[in-house]
Image (cartoon, rainbow, N blue to C red; front, side, top):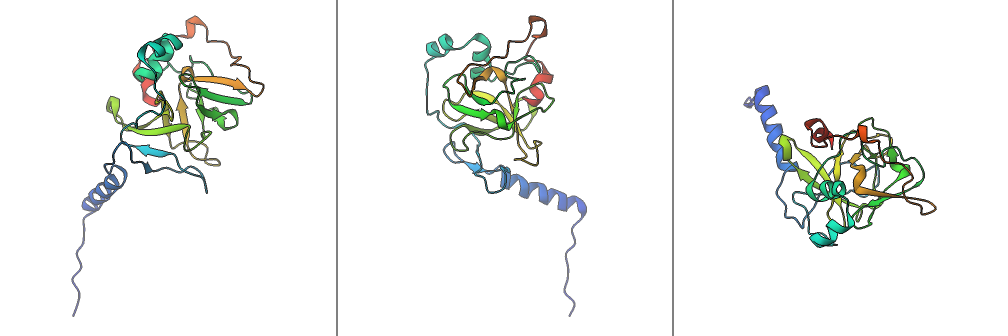
Length: 213
């Protein structure tokens, strides 16, 4: 007896694939539960991805934040602002050292993982610590689906991470606002890079700036 086979149209197969993929990637989890996604390199621990930002481990009052941060640092880290491409600090720093959170001092990135992405924002292929440096959060603002990167200690907005980084490393591109970081060289000195000239500054809330970071 011949068995009956059920054939699916190409359209139905594509729809089924999309549905199954969305269920895998977008399954609901609580803010305290992480989904480990993305390639962090062979044999390396992965940075967790949350559907909602977890409770910060370190907290500051509004007055403390206003006192310790410049207006631009506050706008970027606390209001999820974005620098205009090519105008922020730390973009051209190449000296060996560590980039830390401007809010709480948490160690985020190292120069050895920094690379020129030609985007106008400091870019890194990896973080200092997979468990403490940063947290990834699903971001569907501005009509886009991206992955936001926040400080793993205080929850400050840092930027976004993409899957188009150097394949010989992690394949990740952490696209980070320069003003949310402090750089310290191996000898402990602060960032020697001068701020960009006034004529290079502009409105960081343009749609072009929001596209990548």
